[in-house]
Length: 406
Image (tube, rainbow, N blue to C red):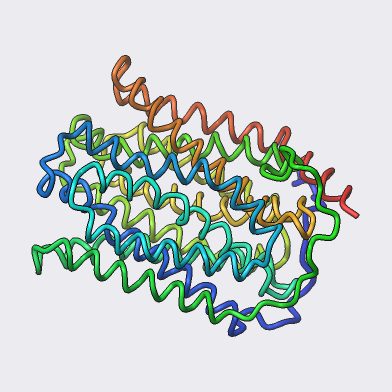
C-alpha cells in the first residue's frame, strides 16, 4: 500500500537566513542555562550524602521537589509569556534562576537546601518555556520548523557534556563550592545572552480573555499533550531504572554512563539529520518516523541481554526521541494562535514532566511487584499504545485543528 499523502507541510521553500544573530544568542542562552543545571545534577546526591549525611530516601525527596515545582509552575509561565513582554519575562526568570545558584553556596542546612532546590524548579521551568518561545519569535517564518529542530541541539549538547565536566571538576578539586561557582557563572552567561536578544515588536494582547483553562493549557492541542505523556512515561522508566536493571538483570555494572552518552549522540544526530524534513514541513511524517524508531529501541532494550543490543537501543531511542520532540513541538505551535505560543510550549513541557513523573512512580511499583524485565515490557506496551494513538487520533486531529485556524 503506497504511503498516504499528508497535508502536514507547514513551511515554504528555504528563502530566509536561519542562523541569524538573535537566533544564535537564544541558542547560546539555552545552552548555558542547561549546562549550569546539568553540571550539578549527577553530583547532588553525593553532595547531600557527604555534606548533610542525608539518607537515600531523603535525597530522593529533596531532589524530587524541583521537578514538582517545575511541573506546577510551567502552565502559569506559558500564560505569563503570552500576556507580557516576552524579553522582560525571559530576562527576569533567567536572573532569578541565576540567583538560586548563589543560594546553593549559602544553604547551610539540609532543610534550607531542600527549600532552595525546590523553589529553583519554578524559575528554571519558566526560563525554558520563555526561551523556547523567544526562539520561535526570532526565527524567520520560512525556517521555523527547521529552526525549532536545531534549537534542541543546544540543550542536547549541554546535557551530554555538562555531567562529565562536573564529574571531572569534582575529581580534580574535590570541592563542591567550585561546582556551584561554575554553575553560577554559566547561569549568569545565560541571563546576559538573553538580555542581549533583540526581539521583533509584538503588539500587546488587546482582548484579554477571562482566566480559564485554555490560558494555561492549550486545549486545541490536548491530543498532542496526552500522546506526549505516554512517550514521556516510557522515557521516565528507562532513565531512572536503567542502571539498576543493567546491573541486576544484564550484569552490566558500569555502562549506564556510556548508554546515556550514546543516547545523547543519537539525539544530536537526529537533529542534524532531520533538518531537511522539518524544513520541508513534513511534521506528521517526521514525528511518526521518530516514534517508530523509539519503539524498536525500547523493544531491543528488553528483548535481548546482549551488550550490543543494550547500546544499540540507546542509539535508537536517542534517534527516535530526537525526531519526535521537534516534530511534536512544531505541531503544537502550528495549532496555536500567535498569542498562544508560550502556552503551547508550556503545554508540551508540562505533558513531558507529567509523563516522566508517572514513569518514575509506576516503574518503581511494577519493578517491586513483577520485576524489572516485566516493567520494561510494560514500557514497550505503553509506547505501542502511544504510537497507535498518534496514527489513529493525533495526526488526524492535528490536520483538522491546523486548518481551523484563521
